[in-house]
Figure 1: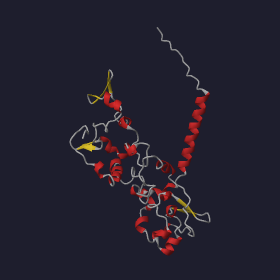
Figure 2: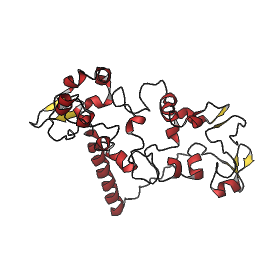
Figure 3: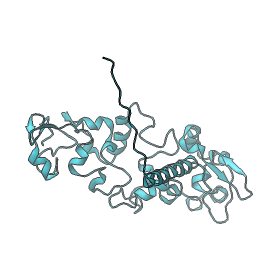
Figure 4: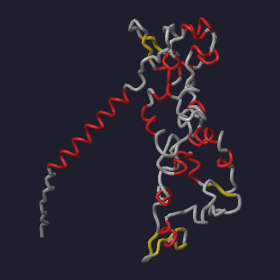
Length: 269
């Protein structure tokens, strides 16, 4: 007997759905355009100083400028008072250098290490993250952007710059201030191989300890396949139903050694 096929028609989207979709598409395009031009910036201003070009800076700062041609920030452009653009300019971040060359003093040039506003004039998305409740104290002046980022060599993002793996790059950056959490451990938490940023938002978060999510929601980013047996939630052959209700994995006396352990493979202590 020949088979028969029933045709069907997809439901027509509502007017509200179409309007919402259009708004989302417009927002994506707007953000994409803004990110495309983000590496082009106006020169920070220093009263009485004018742009002199990177060649003048290199005469004294050769140790910094010799590798700068491959750096992320080498794509920046500085604009002088007459409207001419200076490519690969140190002054895109440090401001016009004429007074600095003349006087040779530090107070005649901008140092982004001490003034994060110099970095945040371009990295406006990061400025927003630093406004969240839990952040590294960059805006307070305790540490600078250069504690984690090297703007003069290779890629300024430690997740991509100068290392053979994400773990070696990001974790080494974090370990400079957080050596106890870096290990090595006899029993390691496998997520550490993927980098600290798998769980933490380094610029800021609404969650304590700059975590990307709260409580079990964070753990379920990786441990997302609990085996359900009736009303039980099983992990590793152990009923975790009551534990999940509490909403914590590491703060309820269970997996307290969240970064790694020397005595327990389940990261209990």
